Length: 524
Image (cartoon, rainbow, N blue to C red; front, side, top):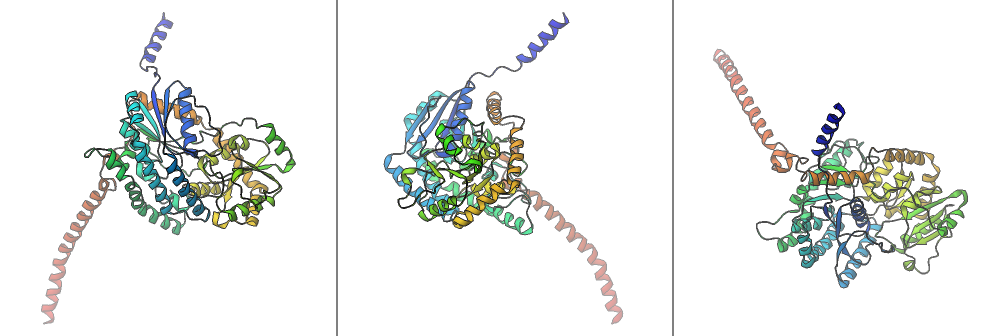
């Protein structure tokens, strides 16, 4: 009898937590490369766990150059930007690549890229057939690429609540209310670690004060798009749409990221693409076997960069590889290799590589990388040291973290010379401290309490079940800026102190005046 009562009580307890029905989830991805790979992985995780998933995707030649198209298990709504624009954009992107390889990666380059995204966004929001179809589907939630302002505008246009997934580290932290102490939380553009001396803290403070100006310049780029596609009186701002997200998920793991305080609506789920390695093709195994005890290294400079537009830069890299004993598997589009340049004897060019599987091979010794977060995460997961050639975005900041954790080092692209490159590779491979640190970080990453795919699924389902993320967002999102920075309080306290000082001076002044008056009378 008692046992039946316990069972009835347990069933009553379970009834308070209704099972989550399959939710209708829209994923939005308008940028190719690693951005698409992450959004595709998110879509697959949600799809394989019983949810109805559809991706709203921009397609274009060159989104993943060299990679064969993969069959999607979930439906996709796609549109194209048009062949003429794609040619123009590729020309702009090619010019930007040259500038990056020359070490030019300032705000101007990023604003140029944002202007292209703004034009693409205008085309996107004119896809009325797709937008009307998606509105009629009435999605419960959207998961969007949080690095592209257009994804926020598309979700707002569709009227769907959204989770923002940021594919890198905390580049936009201030925009979502994550203001870390400037004394030990470095701004990404500073290339500082969390161990800053006086001048480091000074540099970090100045960058912190300048960042709101830069962010406003970035948001203004999309103002014309907002004015055209949203009616007067209900036009959102990019800043407000950042705060409107039900949840922010960052592709970050504190295995390498510097610790910092976070808000409850900020979750760090890094390494979604880092997984146990699958077997390689027999052709690749035969090539690796030729390396003997020297092993091999993997070279990839990002999923969007399949070739190098500067021949001199290419020659320096190629000549550097020729000076090392390891075999080199280099992701490089063979049809775009310049005539007159002989591929180094130990190099094998491949249009596309399965980077994660290569990094899991027992004979791999090094990853030469642009420093993208996905590549860094995969290398850490497999315990592989790195040599970075950062080009733009968060890549410099990522490599600073790699270097701070003794996982490798990096070379600025404008410093690329064959001898220096080869010596750097030899140092990282032969100095055991890099491999030791890599294996330590691998153990930290692999022993996380919950794998990243389970974290992602759990948080998405939590937001759906709880009816949004309002309980996670701080009240600061609703406060005006002067209240957030306590300027009204500081002004009030300053006024109080000024009044007290004034009264004290008035009280002291009377006896002093009286004493001086008496002294003068006596002297007279």
